[in-house]
Each structure stands twice: as structure tokens, then as C-alpha cells.
Amino acid sequence: MNTILKTTAIGLLLAATVAPIAATGNDIITCESRHQRYVTCPIQTHGYVVLRRQISRAACIQGVTWDYDKRNIWVDGNCKGEFEVENRKHSKKSNTKNAVAAAAAIAIIAAMASNNKKDKHDKYNDEDYKGSRHTSFIPGWMIGDFEGYNMDHDADVFMSIDEDGRVEARVNGTKLHGYVNDERLYIGDSEFYLDRAGKGFNTTQVGNTSNQVHYVRR
Image 1 (cartoon, rainbow, N blue to C red):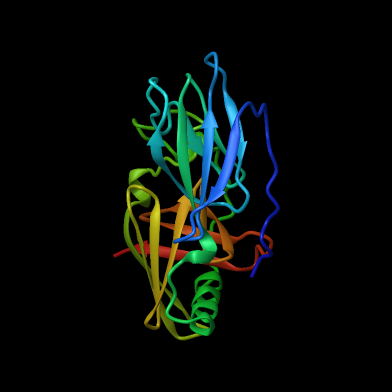
Image 2: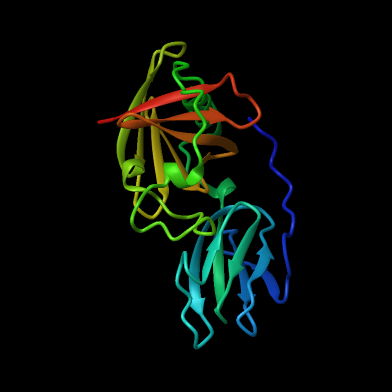
């Protein structure tokens, strides 16, 4: 497993506040664009981000006037909102031991990943793609149910990706929850690069490129 990445602030920070939600352990970050300026607000521990409440009169539209990646939430066009960061350490798991084994199975499925690296704009070739800042965009080819097989663990792996980027994986009866953002898959504490491959996709573990995964559409 990878160590949790340290977060850094990128760009001009005009306004950001962070407060934990006691019931979930998630963080709430208030981020504000003033005078039509593009602003980034750092995320302490990255996770799936949702707009919890729009505060500004100006519209907060995901992919247009706000979005996020593993380090920051950004806002633009006078958007001000409260954003909830769903901490990935709070993913639902049957138990820790099984979850670790399941995540390992996801990481080291048969090494069939393509070595061809394409430009992001080619990968995300979709009419709804709004540009490089829209990191939460999920292309149509990535949405749906996929499966793979781990020969080392003799385990079938099933993965479902929703249009909002949420992910559920099942390995030997163990469920893992994660998300996709900026062409990366986050499952528990593991992080993977994503590459389109035929009717499915390949994953490569960040920090360990020998751990590669191939999934096909079910």
C-alpha cells in the first residue's frame, strides 16, 4: 500500500476554512472566488468531493465554476460554497484484514496494461468534456460494470463505476469503496493510474508500476 500523500496548496488562496463533521469524520471546506478570480483551497486528506451548499448568488457548477483533485478544490466566477470531502479512510469495509487482501488483489491482477501513453484530451474524448480543469469528469467508456481475474490469488474482481465517479469493487465477498478523479482510481489507501484499453481499462499502481491491472466490460 502507498503511504498517504501529503497535501499542498497550489495557486492563490483567497478564502478557505476547514471544519470536521463529527458524525462522519469528513471535512467541510468553504472556498470562495472573489472578483471573478480563480482560487484554490487545499484539501487536508483527499477524497471524493461534493458541493454541500452553495453560498454565493453566482452559480457553482461542477466542471465549470468549481472542481477538485487530490490536493485542492478550485472555484471560479464568484462561486462560493461549502464542499464536503469524503475522507477515503472512511470507506466501508467488511473488516480491515479482508479489505487489505482485496485491495492487493485489485493491484496485481494479470499484467496486461498498455505502455502507450496518450494525451489526456485524447483519453477524455467526449462532447461533455469541458477542459483540463474538469478533473472530476468521467467519460462514457469508463462508466459501467467491469471484471478481471487475479491468477496469483485465484480471485475474480468486479468493479462498478458510476457516472458521478463513485466506485465499488468486490473481491471474494469483500466490498471496497473508492472514486475516480483526474484519470486516477482511489481504493482505500491505494492509488492507480487509469488507461483506456479496448472495451475496458488498465490500472497501474502509483509508486509500483509492476502492479498492473486489466479490466473488461461485463
